[in-house]
Image (cartoon, rainbow over all chains, first blue to last red; front, side, top):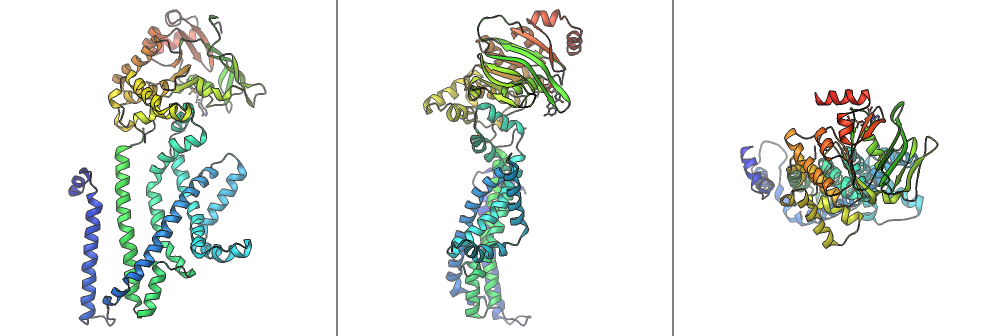
Length: 268
Length: 258
Ligand SMILES: Nc1ncnc2c1ncn2[C@@H]1O[C@H](COP(=O)(O)OP(=O)(O)OP(=O)(O)O)[C@@H](O)[C@H]1O
Ligand SMILES: [Mg+2]
């Protein structure tokens, strides 16, 4: 804790950098141990052979690139939709509120996999529009995230003191200007932790698209596993890759959150 | 009310009534404010002082009465339900502003950005003018050196002075102050009142709700005493504070002085 607080004062984000370095070193060590174990006929009957993963790493990383693209595009669109959903959810028009609530509850109450399948297979049947696979899953994730981000933003917006909004009103800002300059920046700060965890969950949930034949990290993992007959090593590696990406993001965002809290503490 | 007919009032309120559910909070209030006047409103807690400001500001609806700005109808309610807005409604934001008891600076913006927001996004002034205006008004409230600070790093008194600067930057006809010193530590009250006093002396038109009787006595051009949602009496500070006509005013003053 002491080291942490001293490091935190320096202004350079040492903590996440150190954590990432430690993590990478740890994983490398783990890797070597696993390879060594595989060679030394250890107690368990299964013989781990992580060396087999090596040649296929580029293929896995290629899948990771797609996973990351999918995550970033979906999160961006999902946040934009989420802001709209939050505003609609708080609309003074009852019909708008009811429809939005219905949408949110359907998205939150049904499995993401079924939503994916629905957009991918059922939407073309219903509308006659056949989207390419990537666009189709992006649409599904955007709709899903729109509901979750919408609720997150709404709780953030409702946590803003009423006088803040009124002060914007008194200043002469229009409804949209108040949203943009007063409400959203503050709501964003309040809900940042929730936004991060939704984003990280999505990053992992994108693995669902592998069942639709989209060549993401998990899909590549399946391919490589089929080629090598080494599912345990391959899927463990895949899991590690997910972790290595997700964990530093959590750390960096947590730091950013600290920064925000320190510099922009809410008016009391 | 009987105002000296020195011109069209900046704001004229006639027969304003409002209830929250069954509670009648404003009961046929008449007030008008002349240009350059400092009108101080006093009264016990719950007498409707804040509600009066908020209703005039358009933050609350009302159930009867009429509000005019510079002689033009701004809002009116005749049927007890619906407030009809005059053609002048949009100009309200250019006609008056308000400083709250609570701290309302936007915490994610520096003082400069807080002050620049209105002139830039509402008044659409050129960038250079906006910058200079922010510097001028912050200097005027004694915060020139804090221009790049964030609200979280200011004392309560500084926050309220900055909120006043944000209002001054809009350069509007009337500023309402709703107990802007009530949330402050006692030692910070003076610096805020001093800024308001300087404004009054410079000829600003102000409606000030306050419990600071010293300010009322020394700065007010006129004092209004409110109780139970209506104006009990109104007149020059010397008259109201020293020779109140009504028992309720006397009781309130005795209570607050003790
Ligand atoms: N939003 C509201 N809903 C219901 N009642 C309210 C609301 N706002 C104010 N009131 C009631 O209206 C009455 C007048 O309140 P108001 O805030 O205008 O009084 P005040 O004179 O400003 O008092 P104080 O000196 O405490 O600020 C009070 O009885 C209060 O409880
Ligand atoms: Mg009040």
